[in-house]
Image (cartoon, rainbow, N blue to C red; front, side, top):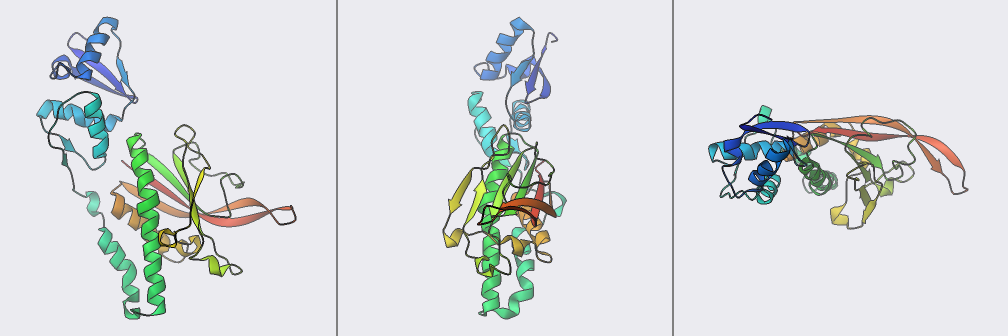
Length: 288
């Protein structure tokens, strides 16, 4: 470590910072850490989000707290409080990169082909499907994305599967299972169970912060909070619409949704096992 500089290792990203900048707030936790490390001559490790830490360094440099769109405001506030750095206003960057589609435009594009069916049964089905798609994104996917962003994860994979398929009975080797990922179990309808399309309850998993592969489920039975049937999402251009919905609502850097065929080992009422093929949806979300 040089005489007038200190090295902070924040979540694996190293920052070489001047002594004067760190001591700008002498009563802050950063200043205390620097004084402690000056005796050991070692770099200072912080288990924090490096993107948020870089925002705080710019605040120390320029006296303006500017939060870019790829960092959650709440993470900045948590770090500022923990480091005991006073602040007033936080300015969030609302600019959209690469002309991301607005959520309203995506909804409008999805509904336009059906505008001539107002007050009809078909219009009711379509409106209901759009609402359920919105529920999937607002109540399930976006909270997961926010949680992973706070942990400093730059990419998350979602597996949307029929509720008859779980991560434990899939025999197909999938991508990203060692990376941050979530399992979301959706209602499943077939020709013999068509009445389950929009009335089945749904469940979704909560990932383990270490292993990222927990199968813990939370059951929800409120019709108003139901999720779309996975067969509906796999139809025609609906997968592309789902991709655009997530991009428009979250403002992440990139979303790739694709259909994946998997083999699943199932047990019938007689206790006999068999292997069946199912279509699931894999969504790769690049946060930053």
